[in-house]
Figure 1: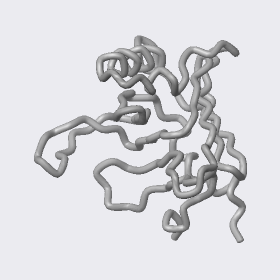
Figure 2 (figure 1 turned 90 degrees about the horizontal axis):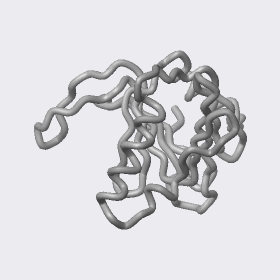
Figure 3 (figure 1 turned 135 degrees about the vertical axis):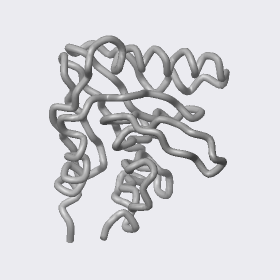
Length: 162
């Protein structure tokens, strides 16, 4: 039997020392890229810039700096595309902006909750939804065929494991 906390922290440890490269959204899903950006082509042949690692978050999350909440998943829950775009740009300004935001450490628990401790007193807190068969978040290498590491319903998706 695996220790979920250790497995999650171990998988996310690849982010330690990497900077937040980009922040975007797909509907109400937060997408964060980490590490140096590189060009890849999507299935339609369009070129896009991706980081070494990507974190896609579909459950509750918030970004804090020095104990003050700066953004939550609610800002992307708006049904208007323009409002979501502005919210994602605002989050990008917080994490990418003019200063390099680096992942300093990772904390997790057995239920898939994660804290990314970032530089400058910033934290990204991800709280798994614990709704069975609903994806909470995933970590993957964009452009790679490697398995994605997925938390679904507050548990590690068994397909994520070797």
